[in-house]
Image (cartoon, rainbow, N blue to C red):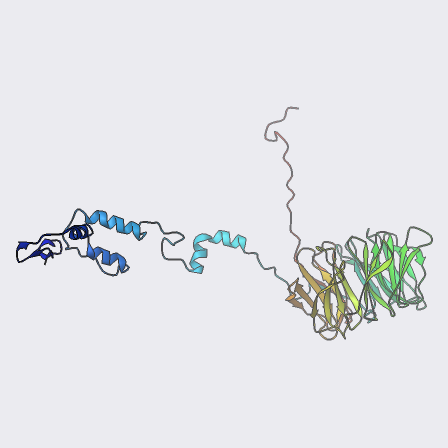
Length: 438
């Protein structure tokens, strides 16, 4: 039966005779739609999510196209897709290859620095005193290493690879207990077992003066411009102004046993001191007063290092009974982190070019460990010493490290990378390509 011809099914026609329609019937007629303009097949196709194919055999009607457009507008069929893939979404690997060409990815990815697991050079260091609380190695700004061996101090030129003896003393004065270069790299301070501190001129090998004031051996030294700070077994810390006759300009009291670690901050306003009493102090230069007192370590505190990229960050290391590296905020006194290294910590050095810190160890690992800061992930373990590492110092450019062990060897490590080579481009003279008229 044709759905478009509804007049034959009209309820108002019966037995071929016309019935009279009342006014109510007239009103009802107004709400009967013209179904000849409807496409029921296409409407079903749109409502069921396009799962039913439209019948291609349905007769064409001039009203179906307008009806289709109106229906599509109601169901938002004509709207563009927002935040949608034009094609099939790429996988993560394909996406990287598409977006970043190989030349770009190689530049963006930071290359891992190669860290050699073996030392570059080894020197003999006979008669080295095997004492954890002493400080017998320092690398000066002129690229010269000072090392205390027995009753003598030797200088090794890292440029030439040559060595010479700076001084030698008798048993009444010696052995040498500490060495420290002045900031200019010309003068050097030497502490002795008899409580004296001597200042020497390395260029002339001449003794300049002797500083007295301690009652026992001087095992730790550090410079703050013209102020030489000395720490002794008598538990005292003395600030010495080497420019004046009465050199003692201040004394810090707080430790109960030997002072074995001293380090001035880069600003020169704060001094960190560690002792065999397991205590760590921070002193303020302007007030000459104690600023902080820490008793978190459970063994002697010798290893101290101020961070080069954060002035108020201090790292400290404990002895064999503690084995921890701790990080402190010197302004607030808060302990930021504590890491158990598993062995005695003798020295700490910050990398000046990366956020890394190097620790040297004694019992029982006898190695150097490079850590990533602040995650404290191990980047490298450097083995080579056959006995505990007692001292460690950094080259002037900050890349190489020298370690001195109880096995009487001085070893050099390329642990912090290599210096970047800069080409000196000579400026070309103007009109250099033209012939000159003389």
